[in-house]
Length: 91
Image 1 (cartoon, rainbow, N blue to C red):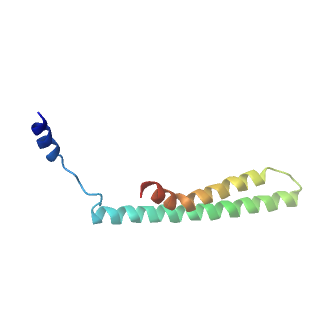
Image 2: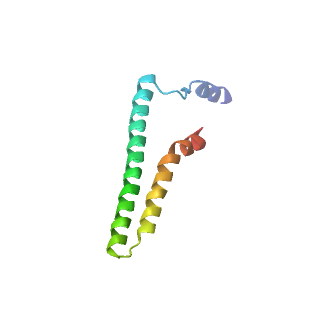
């Protein structure tokens, strides 16, 4: 019984952890474009929030701009730390 079990366990394939080079290149390209787009969206969000705050101040209106700015900055932090967090968890 144990001899048969050892034969079955010996036949189980053990693939390596390296992805094919062609796939890695494509995934890195998509991740790079996504990171660039996330950074651009964060910068645009800060600029738009700042412009909205300036216009509201000029009009004498008060609004919840600091909450919006906090959400935009939180998103920027999330985009900036996504790569290192994934590397820390899965490496």
